[in-house]
Structure formats: structure tokens, C-alpha cells
Length: 179
Ligand code: SF4
Image (cartoon, rainbow, N blue to C red; front, side, top):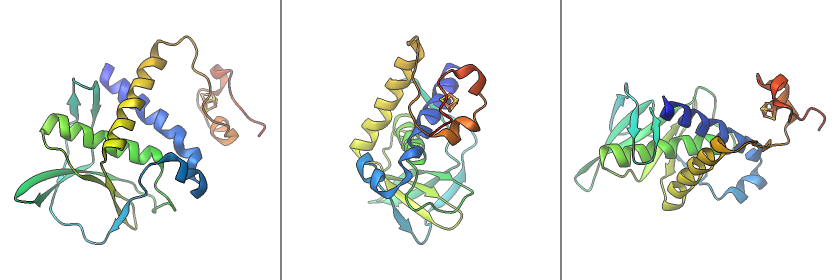
């Protein structure tokens, strides 16, 4: 249960990156933009069970694992499916979510994928699973753990629309509705 809570928080914090959707802001994130994949090769398997990493204290379930063969080795590549069309740049939250699955595959299945796939309604992006992205996932998970024991966690965005539609607004005390 703790793991589930942690991964939900991971996605929530990852959502904070949505503010960085603009191209200019995007460049400062250092996250990969991804490359369009025109054909999906390999065997797609629906992932029914969550992958649980006790080592990293993470749990998550990619929508699919695609088995691709590279250099004679079968590599499970995680796939996250989004029903919407491909945004101008992939959201940081989507990339962090996918990279978390890559880390889980690496730890649980003992094979490190070179990339994950973000599948939108109109395109599939290949997102390289780099050392830097891996480190970003671990740093985000650490930040979440630190926030869990903090007395107060301040608002991490300036987006009034998010607050307007937020279910925690009444209890929050930190909402921004004027910008
Ligand atoms: S109301 Fe509070 S919890 Fe909700 S989005 Fe705004 S700052 Fe975040």
C-alpha cells in the first residue's frame, strides 16, 4: 500500500512539470523530446500485474511490455498509452512515468531497456532511457519521500487553472486563483 501511495505521489509531482509545456521552458528541463516511431515491432503483451521494486521503493504497471530483440537478446520495453493526441512536446510527467517503468523493468526483470515507448492516439514516441533520466526518477522519488515527512509542502506551480479544478482546494490554503 505504501508503494502504491508513493507511486501515486510520484505521478502527482510529475504533473507539476506540466507547466513546462512551452517549447522554451521545455528546453530547460533537459528531458528527452523523443523520436517518432513509425512502426511498432516486437510482441506486445498487456501487463496485468504491477512491477514492484523493493530496492527503490517503487511500484507501477506499464500498459504493455513489448519484447524486442536486439543483438540476440530479448529486451522488454515498457509502453505507456495515452488516449490524447501527441502534444507539441511530450509532458515531463509522461516521460517520468515511462522512465519509472523503465527503472522497474530494469530492477524487477533484470534487463535494462534502452528506451520506453509513449503511445499517443496519433504517434508513438521512443524516449531514450538515459542515465540522466534514470537519475531524475530517483531524485523525484527521494523528493517525494522527503515531502512525506515535511510539516508543510509549498505549492510548486503558479497555475490558477489547476487550483480552480483541484479537489483539495478547500483544505489547501495555498491555492492561487488570481494569476
Ligand atoms: S488548490 Fe492547493 S493542492 Fe490544489 S492545485 Fe492549488 S496549490 Fe495545489
